[in-house]
Length: 254
Image (spheres, rainbow, N blue to C red):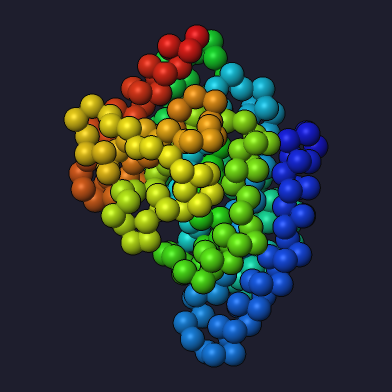
């Protein structure tokens, strides 16, 4: 196991006792009250890396919103299981094993890596998946109480960044007018930031994020989730601009 993975596991183990108590209590309450069982908390998105990331010249962390179920391989219909190693193994087998299905998010995720590797054949480029909301429900969407528990007991993203040291970040998290506002989640995890305009795009829809406490070695961009890009028929315009910005950034830093 490489040093970064060891640091991540140590980090998760420090937070898991309190998180497990709170999530188990929350899930038990859902069962007792016999409310919508799909609102139970799923497993957290726990990261792992391979040698490609550790040895990369350019590291890009790409954030989605939250999971739609996660780690169902751990049993009980993906309800939070409290087992760190088993959940990390799912990430290794699924993401690091390149078994991601076809969807707008994963199509554009792959496209970023593919186009940058074509543009810079002499550089080692690695992309890593994260979510700005680390724990989802049993299905799509957001549950406020799960997020509140996550914020209080699993505020881990800034520590993950300190361990993994990405150069760039891309937040496919949508405009701040969304309910919930994922910009607020970014602020909660990484501190205050300024939105900087990009060309003639609406700053709410597509912007550079400049953090007060510099979280990334170079730059961070925030725009629509690819699902919304496809729905609004703006994929080519937005993705072409994002990829070209990354290409220019990488070129200028060489």
